[in-house]
Amino acid sequence: MAFRNLKKRGLRSWLTLLGIVIGVTAVVSLISLGTGLQIAITSQFGISSTEVITVQAGGINFAGPPGSAVSKPLTIDDVKAIERLGTVKRAIRRNIPTGKIEFNNKVIFGFVANIPPGEEGEIVYDIFQLKTLKGRLLGDRDKKNIVVGYNFYANKVGFDKKVEVGDKILIQDKNFKVIGIMKKKGSFIFDNIVFMNSESLEELMGYGDEVGLIAVIVKDKSLMEKAKKEIEDLLRKRRKVKKGEEDFEVSTPEAALDTVNDILRGVQIFVAIIAFISVFVGAIGITNTMTASVLERKKEIGIMKAVGAKNSQIFSQFLIESGFLGLVGGIIGAIFGTLIGIFGTHAINNLVGATANIEINFALIFAALTGSFLIGAVAGIIPAMNAAKQNPVEALRE
Amino acid sequence: MADKKKELIVLENISKIYDMGETKVVAVDGLSLKVNKGQFVAIMGPSGSGKSTSMNMVGSLDVPTKGRILLGGKDISHLSESELAQLRGKKIGFIFQSFNLIPNLTAKENIMLPMMFQGISAEKRIARAEELLEMVDLKDRMDHYPNQLSGGQQQRVAIARSLSNDPDVILADEPTGNLDTKTGEIVMSFLDKLNKQGKTIVMVTHDPDLAKEHADVVYWLRDGKLEKVTKKRRK
Image (cartoon, rainbow over the protein chains, first blue to last red):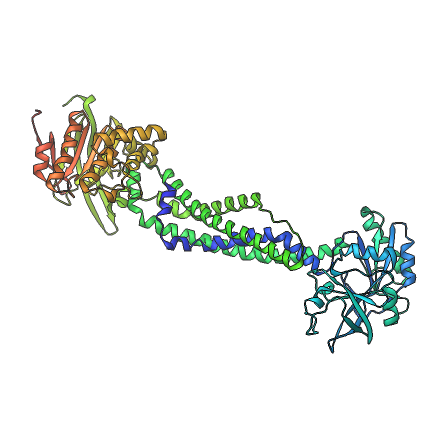
């Protein structure tokens, strides 16, 4: 019967549901998008591997290129010292300096990253999951060859011309041949970078034994925190700094992920506040429309009382009706939210080339629907009480 | 004095006073009346005579300010609202001037409603509703909504509804008031039929001919007081 009454509702009643719809949409879409968002943000920061500790001189940074104003750079000796630690399997030297890049008579400044020779090069390719879209990756003998990020190929770096495999590019006024184009990563850093063999890059930039950052691979994943501590102790000793005054940064992927999750949490809290406000407004809307409905159906209440409805029966009928009103809002919101989740995850996948799973979270939908029914019911308590305490004689006189 | 067992409804010196702030409106003033089992009783009077208020109290929709109401020997003047509601649902069937069917429900669902409030199972409700619709010759209209039915048909649905819980008494408040003479007669014939089957009927009307024609006992009210009682010999 509650359902029947809802069917007869006018547009006005449905409009008051908007608040609930928006609130539920926000919550459902946010949670469904959560995984996708995390992947998107993670890939923006270039965190692709969970087994690598990054060591950098200077301020806080992720695994990206170091700032140019590094106070006291790391050196080859630091790399070697770290590699001697018990927990460490391998320490790889990474240099990612900024260079002058020229093509099609246009000059830009961009990051050039070293690819170490031999097995270490493969490890670098592996941990950052670097793959070519066209051409091939650098080998040890590619002294005059480079591989460029996807944006060079997509003509998004400012050359006004697409860079193809076989093209010649000037880096620091020296000629290099493009032998490979990287697959799109969805990360600003990786898509705009130039890869060059370590030897060629050092020759070109002349940074000697300075090291931009050190990628540390631990012997076992479980040793991550221990290794981090050991590296910090070691570097404090080598760089003669006290605890708390470090001029270097040792970051585990967990730490970086924590930061990502902090950002996500911020977004979540923000959306949750919006959702809360929407639901609150929606609940007031339901109270409002139910109050009006009780007035309009005063006579009906009188009839029901005359034919034997107890106050509690009238009360629960209006309460259920109000709950259904909320539930309808919840259903619409859950549909929108799920759609946004699906399409949003699709969009993120396309943007960063990730493969986040699109899954419909039934527990979440169930919770959202239960919640909206309850909110509707709670919003209907006062109107339902008004309905229940109608005097039958007066109500029938209407 | 009649046999106590036959007394179904007894109003003992009841008064209903509405407190309107500074003035007090006396709608019913020391009224006593009696309805025996199987009787067809009419309460007559011009508008403002207190007949509707009296009927509301007989129907336990309202409670008197003073006096006692006995329904089947039980004092109902001081029952709680919920107890009154249960009582109404079980023992009293209402028929109103304006039919008072619920517009969102079909004829059949309207008839099922009082049974729903008594917690009767859906199967039994449906069976009973169909049986009653057959009785009022509206079985072919059971899935129609009130606005798809004529006034006379709506009133017949209302009669069927009033019977759904097999009440002790049927209270009819101007049952033909909104109907033309012919359909009014049809509705009255149904009430007569019910009365012959042993149902007690209390009808409120302002039409003296209707009262005289159908009722065994007519209570004439004026200004909240009983003016006279006329009785008809049982045929």
